[in-house]
Image (cartoon, rainbow, N blue to C red; front, side, top):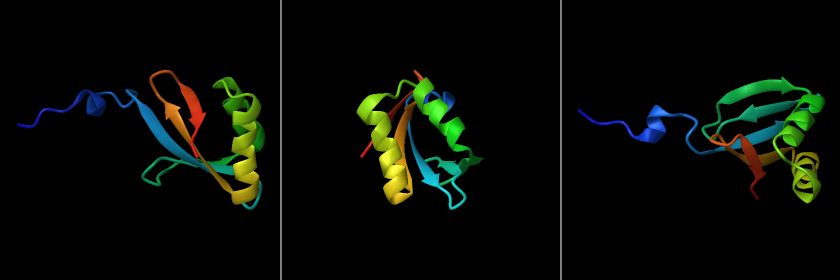
Length: 89
């Protein structure tokens, strides 16, 4: 019998790479690293509040929005253990 690792038992045990996509209607979609939709039709105000509530400010916050405006997507890493999000290039 194969034993499960701590990471398998606890889905909140480490960083999770997520992608934010900008939709044509101005809303956003949040995908996990496997491409599964976690949340769709996210209003910009909700996304803005969530990014600020997780500690984004200054250049890091501006870079996420620059990526979304210029490329229609941005990648972030959500550290599920601390609920802190960082932008990843």
